[in-house]
Length: 353
Image (cartoon, rainbow, N blue to C red; front, side, top):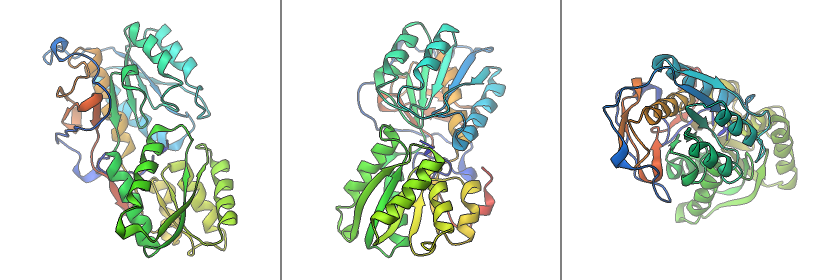
């Protein structure tokens, strides 16, 4: 999530459950050059049925990506496409390469991928694209020339800034804090962390001090142990930000059963179903996320539009994304899902994911 990588959004790249229908989202952020050519797209091309689409998450046993898969499968049903899920049980850098190669060998029409590493999978993706397979990344991107479009769950700046805001509110605007991230190579995590660091130089946050960034490798037990280690290493720690659904759930579990409950604040990105009990017992005051199912749904709709020739991935192209309405492809082939949601004791029971 994980982020899982997210579950619970969340920010400018996430979509509110109560405000997701029929809205056009436009994005103009990104790095590098756009993929595809606007002159070769045919917006009126018939939407192909019977498409074969592979969904490749960071880990098949990650609860966040299980929810994303549900959205992808729902889109597949609407599109009359075959969506199958495959992938590794670990989130290591090169663990996805074999699955990418297999999808290409099976002549899948499109691949929807949450990348564990932006570089390790790039050569395999380029080969697959050369063989005709469309590539859509979601949650965590790769190099722009290794995919057709990237479906970003949230505007990176918004989600990073929101987490700093939630932490500052929880600890009174001052004190030491740590970050418990996913893997050291996760592009989304690293982007958010760098933005958080930039945010800390602003006058309103000068009394906040980031003392360590730890990596739980999107593994529950490792994240649990890293939480314990952070608290042991930093006796004055007042808060933890965990921008990954696996990490925040593991950290909440540790804190809730320790003497640190209520003394060390915890926030970040998680799902309501994971954190509901911890919100109610006071371990977590607030956290954020997008709606993961809609991320999978949008990415699959984009894959179908690409495979049908309706878009190529160039900036400014528009496509219909089923019940989510029309979306516009931004710079570097980026599509942003929508705004984030912040979850607290006041609203956490309204959500079920």
